Image 1 (spheres, rainbow, N blue to C red):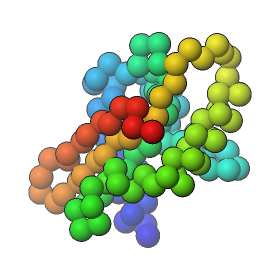
Image 2 (tube, rainbow, N blue to C red):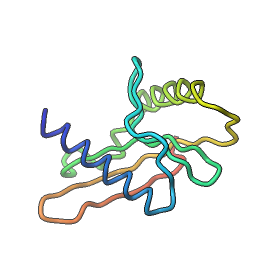
Image 3 (tube, one colour):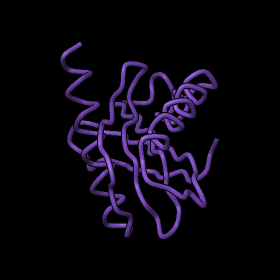
Image 4 (spheres, helix red, strand yellow):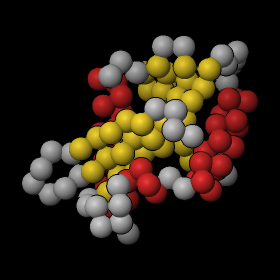
Length: 118
């Protein structure tokens, strides 16, 4: 369990660095409320992106992005609404992204940014 938590935290940091390098601003990282957590909230020009990060160390269970199920998507949408209600608006555009991070031993991480996937 501790290994999975460390892997997830490492993946989230890699994802944040990747998005910054792509010109996005990270607004929040690991935003929590009593209903759950949003991994990353970022700005991409005029768009606020709610980013779910999935990290795996292999492909035994499929690519990381496949772990973002419909149920998980619904939870992220509800959490995004809660976050938006706490902020100063107006919100012109929002989107939901997934960053897939594959961290294999002895090789560079493979990061894929899927924009507006749900």
